[in-house]
Length: 296
Image (cartoon, rainbow, N blue to C red):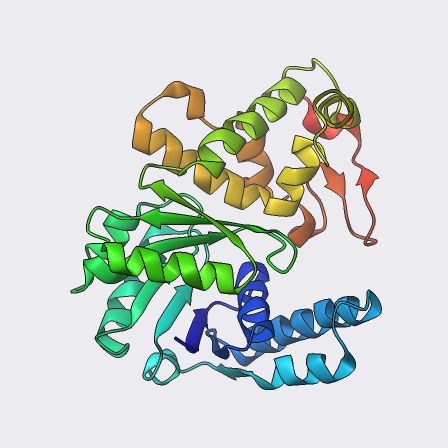
């Protein structure tokens, strides 16, 4: 398997395209607009420059990697000869279902369809296709070129052969694949999101401030970054979407998103991507936001 398509040129999509191309795969990167594709390719080039600076790759290798990525806004054409498609669109159920219906109609019959979803049921996604046995979750971690883990999520109908192929493909990218079953949030976000939500509740209730909460988790629990900073990196809108999936899927009030998180997303405070979340990222560095912004 060498011909890959990636749907979505955002943070996750361009990272996935970068890694596949780095390890010799022929990649079609697909998005709805040329401007999105241009931003995605610029991000890939910037990340490759970082690897060159660290002497992880050479300038010649960087040029070769970029040459393996072709961009297009025509999804039907972009997947028409692919062996694997990895969808990395926004974490929205209806959008993903539409994409997979379209992929099922356009991709070759033998093509494997994978989703980078961080919480949405693979079984539900597979059910809108005529090939549920060839639909699987391939959940990369951010930043994709750096993080080793890939959650491999088997839907109810995913075949053993497809699972084995995707496990081996992940290893070819120098990743560590972990097979998990199809339940809301899988493993990573079923554990992570309640922790992030509880950190937001702790802030909302006035127990401690942003920096204090993050410092406790970094120095007391040996986390590389605090949960509020991590939420900013993930995207507060993404955190909210995942918590809603968990809440709807399990019907357990412990997954109900904190009102502060809901209000921040409604106000457009989505973290790094919008320039402000629990920290201010406008100037490219982490700065504390005024505490008054988080009062209930």
